[in-house]
Amino acid sequence: MKIIHFSHCNLGSAEASTAHVMEFADRLRKRGHDVIVLAPLKGIYKKETPCKMFYYPYINLKGLRQPTAIIFGFITLLLLQGVFKFDLIYIRRITLDCFPAFFSRITGVPLIVETNGQIENHEYEVPIHFLWSCFWYPMLKLFERILFNTAFAVTADGDGRLQNFKRKYSNSTEKFNMIRSGGIDLDRFYRINK
Figure 1: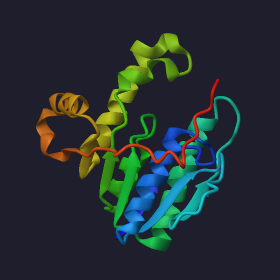
Figure 2: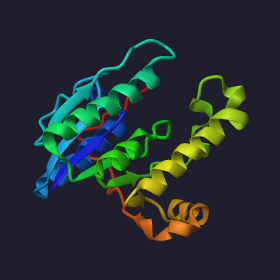
Figure 3: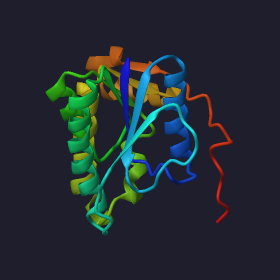
């Protein structure tokens, strides 16, 4: 299977999210799939990997990072689809980006969404925080609904999270599946003491 693993993570960092993305992609590759990892050009993944790596540009200015990453990521997805003809797009839920769902609808490539938290957990990560309840939260709920409704399958790594999503999306509970992450390979992840 040709799988595109689409991410907004800085793969040049030593963060847990980087370790998770690359560990999962490597496991898919070891199972015989042709895996391409697509991430923003915030940093280059330096460790050896059997996966093909592609990076998309973004504008590194406050207020433009996320919007330009979303736009350039989507354009790059479409360009790579023209070359590789993917069988599946896999994302770790990118809360502020519903373009993977649009990509799936336009191309017919099935979307798998891995959940990595709930919208409420991101309340203090948004700019202009006082707009949380009247703008950010409703917008993020809409984006989540678009992603989940488009997805062929949605995974959760905890029973509580799985049950919560099944309650919120009771008309499509068959899409939701439990997949334990299996932890993080500590050789890839180095905690930074702050």
